[in-house]
Length: 63
Image (cartoon, rainbow, N blue to C red; front, side, top):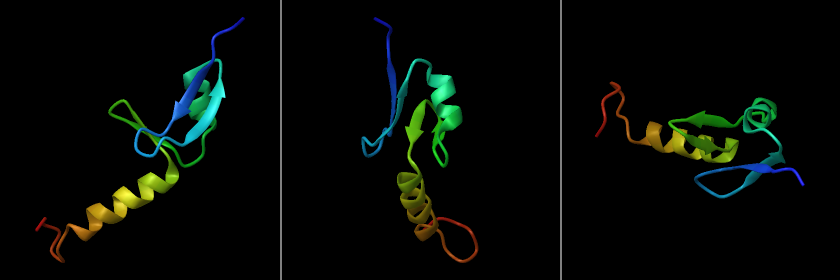
């Protein structure tokens, strides 16, 4: 029996892929991001990007 890994969104829990090697799985996932050790699905990336933009004023500083 071989070991399996799953790439799961650290924000919502969506399962992106299951396979034998995490690096290969991440390479095949379109729209997913892996930053600071966190996997983020495309929808969560969109939501966090929109929230970040909502927290900025017109001159680019945070409120």
